[in-house]
Image (cartoon, rainbow, N blue to C red):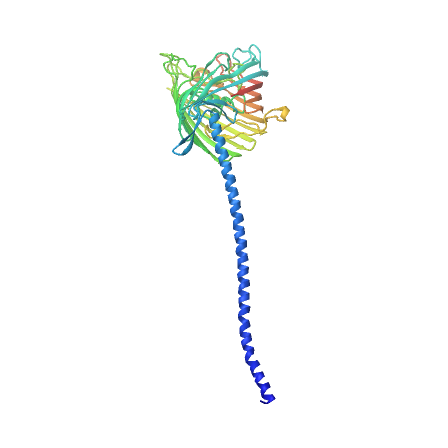
Length: 525
């Protein structure tokens, strides 16, 4: 073979082998790439596995910690149950704690103590209050042995007085029933203990209480406020007179009250107070109702409106064969001296007895932070057998501001509670309690069908009980939830004129102005 042929054959052979080599190298590259992809996926799976294992370990640790905490809590509960006199038993493979059967002592947030049965169904608690008053009468004008307006025609007497000195018990029976028995050795004339409260109640329905017996009433806003919690030392004369027929602290009643966070309703059939003689042929029979609504009611603010009405159906008399009569009167918003200024005298005679009394009232209050305001107005109607109805009216408006505490709404009575200081009084711990600064204006008009410019004989239906306006400034110092001081300055203006007579063409003035400084130290438990 020639050389040229040999070269040509070699070139042909190399040309033929080149595609075969490329074809063999291509699969090797793809396999390497796939191997790398698989390695990458395997690495990712490894990381996911490690993450899952870490989470599983954390879960096991948390579960172990939770189990240990639960077991510790259960052990503590079992130990506490044993320490209290209970028993720990196993029933049907389940551990159970049988609570102790011995009674226990409880303490409320206001530091009121009680003894309770083990299940809380029966409780008994001591309860009481001491309101010790001191007072000085200043600037009486006129004054002296013939000073008009005073009971003895003289000067008001300074002094001290245990306005309230109550002691009793209160509690629950069979979970749903309530009871209270309280005696009071205080009053305008302190020292003689009388029945203040003796009441039974049923509270087995949510936010509802049915009550029977002697006890506080809920006819007015100030009536519904405990004497421990009222802003001033005494309630207003207008409120005292309006509540004197079906309201008050210790009147007999059969009634019910119900409430929610922003509304209240109460109604009752009422009788007499405990100190009314049982020898009277009629002791007073009446009824009242009160409803209120708070369009604003939050933890820090409250706006309150309400109305009330009462009727005295049966007017008390003085015994068999005596006429039904009433007298409207009140002291000048203090109780140190027993002198009465506002006084209608006896309304009703044998020939023209009183046949009924009706009272209508409106009320409002608001609380925003430390600010508090409250007011009421009432219309008092006395009906007689003959002649026109005698009409009287009065009311009050008061406001206060508290530093270190505030007044809050109490839904169960539809009123406002007292002040519980944020920091109780304790100089060694830097606490000074709470301070409340307050003012009140009150007015009562007990004059009807009367003019001093006419003879009394020409005014057969006249009532001349006088008109009284009082201005009160107050400072209340709350030491803690159980003790406080109250200081009041009261300026009273009493206006009254007797009618002209056959021998005198000028009315006889019986007015009086008076300044009173009062202080009260108060303990309640």
